[in-house]
Image (cartoon, rainbow, N blue to C red; front, side):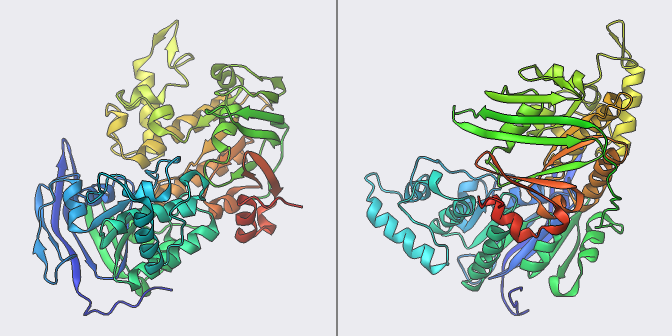
Amino acid sequence: MTTTQPETRRLVVEMRDITKKFPGVIANEDVTLEVRRGEIHALLGENGAGKSTLMSVLCGLYQPDGGSLHLALHQEELCETVLRSPRHAIQAGIGMVYQHFKLIPTFSVTENILLGAEDTPTVLDLKQSGARIAEIAERFALPVDPEARVWQLSVGEQQRVEILKQLYRGAALLILDEPTAVLTPQESDALGETMHSLAASGVSIVFISHKLDEVLAYADRVTVLRGGKTAATVDVADVTKADLARLMVGRDVLFSADKPDAELGPDALVLHGVTAMGDRSVTAVNNVSLTVRGGEILGIAGVAGNGQKELVEVMTGLRTPTAGSVTVRGADLTGKSAIDFIQGGVAHVPADRLGQGLAGNLPLTDNVILKSFRSEPISHRSFLNKKAIREMSIRLIEAFNVLPGDPDAKASGLSGGNQQKLILAREIDATDRLAVGDEPAVLVAVYPTRGLDVGAIEIVRDALLNQRAIGAAVVMVSEDLDELRTLSDRIAVLHGGEVMGVVDPASTSKDDLGLLMAGERLS
């Protein structure tokens, strides 16, 4: 249910004809964004549409090349403002809550909120500061214990701390970047209530989300960017999910996936009693047994940080288990290297795009062949075939609509969503090549649609279902429960590194999945 926004409610942010250029790219061109006091305003757009750039201008990270910014966050009348740094933006009343939290786990809630605040005294009175934080938390309905250590808090509670940090600094406008990406369904509902409570208190909110259902549930108005320009600003009450998707990508989008019954093949990936330590020498995966067969998609659900990363690394040869075994297509690969897993038939879409998935300073042509440069036709007798490389690059770039479509562009210059599409193109192509006779390849895809717009999500989902149809064994790690229920044949839910249960998505509700993600084991 959205907050009622009278037309007479005054503007507090007016970004007028904002233009921002980078070498060879116009990220924003004459973009207009208006936000009212106490409004929840969603910002939508395809990958590379200019959302992040626009918010970076509003946060003082970038200086616009054209246009003007007027603010009325701490005064009654709009006043033209130049934000020369993030500090100036904070002083003007703008606070940003990032998707990945900026908290110190060993510090208390109070210490994290005070850290970096300009009015923090040299000698801290944590009790007095904690009382002030508790008062702010009560006023805005953000329950959290000021004395608790951050590592003791749930993900949803940590997000509240990030919001409180901005409110403590006097933020009258909150920018939330993909705020539900790391939350359970229950925590997402609680965040929606929090946003409405903040809006009712007069705080304005701009939130970036790729989840159209969330936008329709939480927002009052939506501004859609397409191709770096303002496509439309609309009232949520006047549009449908299909309308928003059409504004974003310029065409109709199918939200349902055509998934015929699975035709199961042989066991492709078998984990038996796998235990593995995390980077801090603490057990991260505990006695996990899973089997993935050819022709099926096994979804892995769980709140971020519950062993998904380490489990995937075991599946792909990047982490050696301390107990148990990993078998790929009948071959025991326990303790083998990542190259052994690749040659054994495992393709991998990692969560860390630039850290693991791509070489940012290399062109797209080099990144496309990272898995195939050892074999024909890409190489012959240790010499690379430049013509074959270029043909392969153009084919995959076009198939996955990677923008810009220049094979010589550096991977680091792509938007996050286009980087993701490039990795998916390479790994799905590798899955096709790794299949041998009746032995299916294994595709381990971690957050395959994270950060993608609805049009790109449609492409990725079709690609995953196509791999399933041709007999590949797909493991899909995702925090999007709708996606898991739509694409998966079975869902394994992780909590604390253990499997709480393996369920049938057709007969399991989102609420039940949320309970499993919170640690309630399936009986």
